[in-house]
Image (tube, rainbow, N blue to C red; front, side, top):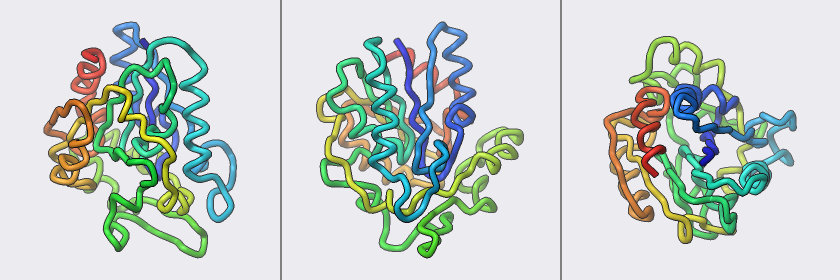
Length: 231
């Protein structure tokens, strides 16, 4: 079994965001990878109008998923669930989807279908530059409140501005219809409320809940490890 981690919006360096869980899995002989998402500027392409968006993110993840026949669990976080919905569709190696505080879009849906009319207060949206980002001063209290101080300090250095067009772009496939799926509700999440997550989770095959914030793979990595190994 191999694990492919797909990170959320407005961050870079997936290896860092997943490193605590990845290390625990590696101790059990399970290797993982975290594809770079072009819309977050991870591949060197300039983000913004005309820059990479959801289609490029889908292509980047799909290229990793189709590169091996080894049974694969895709672990998607937040916006990563939108990417995964299309990227994992029709890939024989994908055996299970684990969605963490995530979105399960139907065909024709995207991020805009899961948000409010106004941007969330923790987001910095720059229409002129065509980008959005998490406000650094709100990162810890919104997303990393239950994480260790070292993670909180390092988190700001792993934020990224992302192409704004990803909000309005939609998926052309919904892998969760055909691939077994598990949804991990994060009850202490201050970014996406537990009530919203529970509504999103109704589309998944199995639902698990943990007392953790938005990034349980950093704050409760042993929980995520055990959940992955149990799939």
